[in-house]
Image (tube, rainbow, N blue to C red; front, side, top):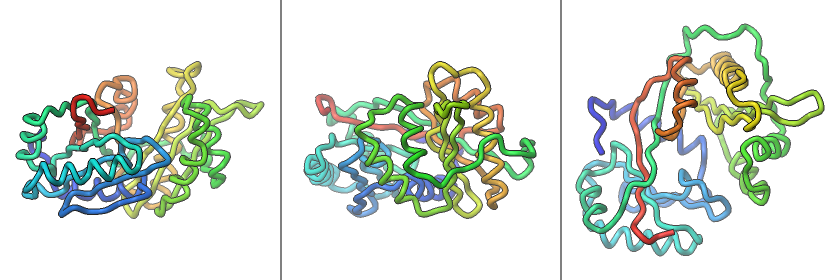
Length: 257
């Protein structure tokens, strides 16, 4: 996969901030391949091999087998995350070795410096990680058993963090979002709306609040990641001026689970 006319310095910068925005518990390098593993949470972003140099493709078979053993130690299937920085020769090897792409994700950016946003925040950011994690799992329908793992990940985020919760009067959460402000960049993570309240404008309110908070905090550009097949979410982001910067894909060998 090679995106046409892609801005490689921007890709490298967005990859770096995304690693800080959703940190893995274990990060090691094999050359320029970053091996990200988290035994407590199955998120692919923190359980994948991410090649970061288009020229680093030597000994693919041996290096992937070494990575597989590390993933097995964490109880995870081996997954390769292909960005524009991955060598095309490695993609060719994966195809020949029986690997398949199983998901594509768009990375989108928006200039928020001049974006028209509400003067007041509908939702104010919370600093209560436990309360946010509880609300996020309820809104997204996530496994309650992942509560400690999500809390650990959120607690590990080093840049300035905004945790947004929209609740009914009786305290039932309707929508949640994470915004990570890292210098002049702000990442929108895990924007979720409860299933019975989608298409009600809540997503727009939450995104507007997060972006306004990020701009007040000093961000000039916002970024986010969205699965390519999630048309409603992409339509929402495009309303706020987000456009595609690049895409990435997840690969897994046939038979791996």
